[in-house]
Image (spheres, rainbow, N blue to C red):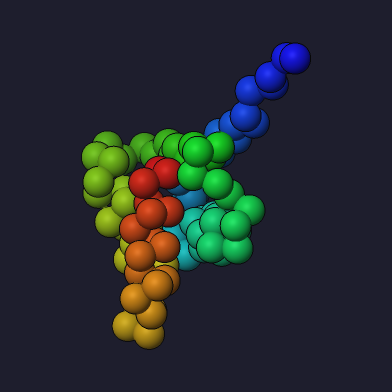
Length: 87
C-alpha cells in the first residue's frame, strides 16, 4: 500500500499598493476560512512579502490589529492566536 503525502498549501501575499486599505488584504478572508475549518494548520503555510522590512512578530501584530475587535469572543481570540501561527 502506498501512502500519499498530506496536501500542503502555501499562500503568498504581497503588500497592498499605496492608497489601499490594509483591511482589504486577504487576512480577513483567510481567517474566516480557517475558523470554518477549511485551512488546517498542518496543511497550510501563509507567507507575505512587503517592501518594508518587518519581523514575523510585527507582521502578526499588524494582522491581529486588523482582525481583532473589542467584541471578539475568547474563542475567536484563541482562534486568531492559532491562525497567526500559520503566518
